[in-house]
Length: 86
Image (cartoon, rainbow, N blue to C red; front, side, top):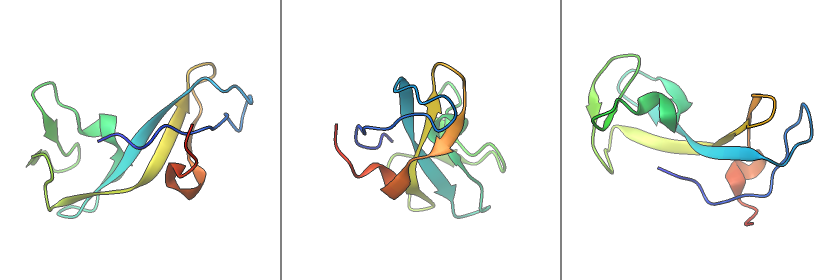
């Protein structure tokens, strides 16, 4: 569940050392969050309703891309879902 590599900088500190991630929408319970929220050590499950998710699960969709600054920790949505390739 990884978006394409992007050229982004942190809106808070302008650092370019950011980690991108997919933003996932769980259709069953409407939880929306970064893909790492769904990792449970044994695979993937929804952090809200705790249902297990499979690869290519029809009950979950990637709705965009987000990023987290490794320098200051700010999390933000990547404009255009990360469409600018690095």
